[in-house]
Length: 307
Image (cartoon, rainbow, N blue to C red; front, side, top):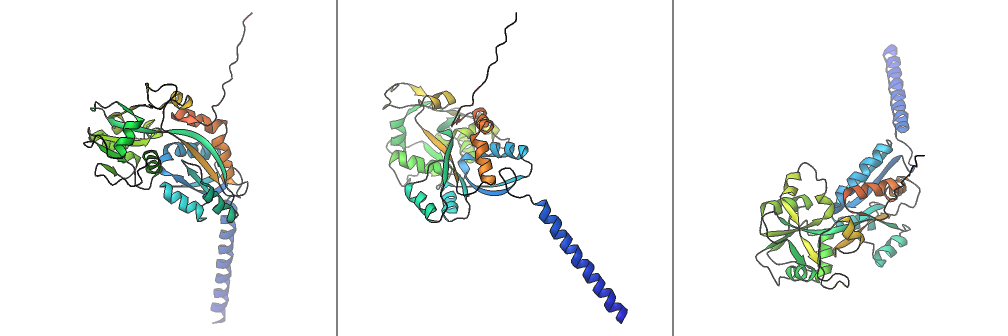
């Protein structure tokens, strides 16, 4: 009986030591948070997913112990997460309003806001469609149901940043017309337009460049509509498609900034990711993506003379 008790005590002691050793091993495998190690939770506007995915992929390749956890949500959801202190780093397609900044400051979470790119709100139609030109005024009329009622206008989802942008543009706060409706996301917008000649889709420009395999065929079946801004001082009669050139020259009328909002208040992985995106390599990724980087990376040209 005594031997059994002794054996039991020894086994319990060995198990306890093993558990403690595992705990210590686990603790040592979790890297301390710095600008290039550790983890950070980031809530990102889902309409920015293509470019954010590219940035995160390269960042993780360069920093193998970095674990940015990116949650893609609608704009409204991202703002709720940020303002409720569920996340302290967000990626948005607009700047914070003064009341939102005040709310964060009152919670001792002063935001550091930086624009990192300029995107285009893009209008697409089926390859079979003859509608390849439109204007700012025409789009406003369409969003208010005053023209082209036979054409469906399709966007990603009711709480998205694109819908907020279109409401601000048109002055129509409630898209209740039957021919204006949401699908699920930007991929579904592109797929819908690829199958419906009598429709216009609205999506972010970055979704049309280097698409993923699951919707690449749909991208081939749509085309971008050129837009004229009648109120432009420089080119009121010219039509422009979104491109880095027309965005840089401010010729394409439907643009929006993409912003990093850092409320972490420390020099951790969130700051490290922001430095990367805003730095030379991060801006070059945006340059290759087709949208406009906030600061165009410089190119050094070395001229060698042969004597």
